[in-house]
Image (cartoon, rainbow, N blue to C red; front, side, top):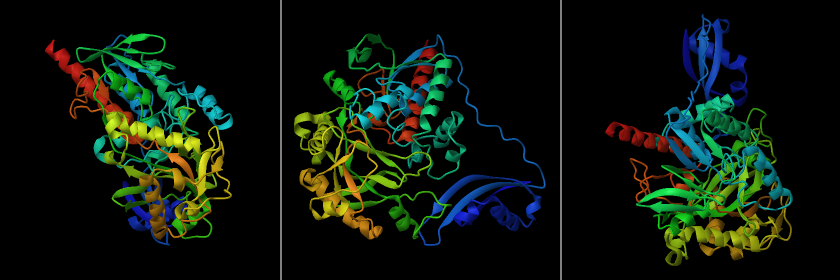
Length: 523
């Protein structure tokens, strides 16, 4: 017989099979020896009280041997010679759109401005060591997209957008640990994602799809409300249908669309700083302990407050992680966070950002749809001006920032290029800086000890989401003006992370295949 059971256990007991087998046996009214097989299929931590608990769902067999459970397999048939769809961008939206197109019998042709995931490493190393930014190959651009080398968290709240489980299963099929199918907040880790991305690429190519690296799309040729071709530095490529999955940092795409009179619009987003604490301090606050138990992972947190009519909240919290330089050009400083799979760094960092509405953007009247983009650039340029040269980021001790005073020394941080003391409370735009100061003070009330000069803030965290939306029909996913353009993912304003972007890529591919099907029926 078999049954799924929900157990609430201590961290030690949830990590010790012989212990939870005894609990299963007691619940079922049998002896532990009768149990022939157990498997944890769901796990989450409840640290709200001092007595921390782990909730697990376990599949248990007793008095019979389990049947072999076949691993979920995805078939990617040959699409050589089939109708083609061009995909701009090889991030999660573009890659999952490509896989779904193949499943549905359509050939994907991906145009990616950056390099393949392995070659990308050298350009990322150059940012950290030589502080040189390749504008086409960096933490944001290249195979796998921004998430590949900046964390790989897979948690999403957008359950209504599509099949989250399938995305996790596809990643598992391509090499991710089975843990991502179990944990409530799954995480692959930036050290493991590159191999998964390479496996996805192999399946796309083996099925007859194409991926063209170092192929930046700079312009669109529009005729009769259709894009007839895209222009790259080396050639003009004719297209029939396009999935635009270029990501939230592809400013040249937004500018090219605007220049071609293709309708886009400014949208709200968020900006702020990245804050870093000693991981041991976050562990103490979240786990109510002096030293974290070996059976607990590095502690995370999620904070949100309303300050003067705007949300101030944590974003992309990285326990046991590092802060990385995420600029896409030499004249700006942008910071982001990541964690390796083990999450074993001595630092914990998180974006801490302020909601930006359109009325908060001073450039709105002048730049219209590109106003948010221009505001981002302005603040990133300010961070560069107030940094220490190269990619050395402006920084300030947290309590000094809140109290409006200069930090005369700074602690060690995980940010490899280095930091320089800067009075960030002076140069951050007031509607961001003042709300952050008040927000940090409020967060200390929720997590006593959070506001401390052991913590440091780095500027700026500005790429939380796209400042531009590319409007599309909610049913067909077509652009509202251009008949063969299908905006998709974070860059189009319809996703916010690896999983939601992947889901949006799949749904966009399905929308296009529905159009192919309708065309065939009409003929």
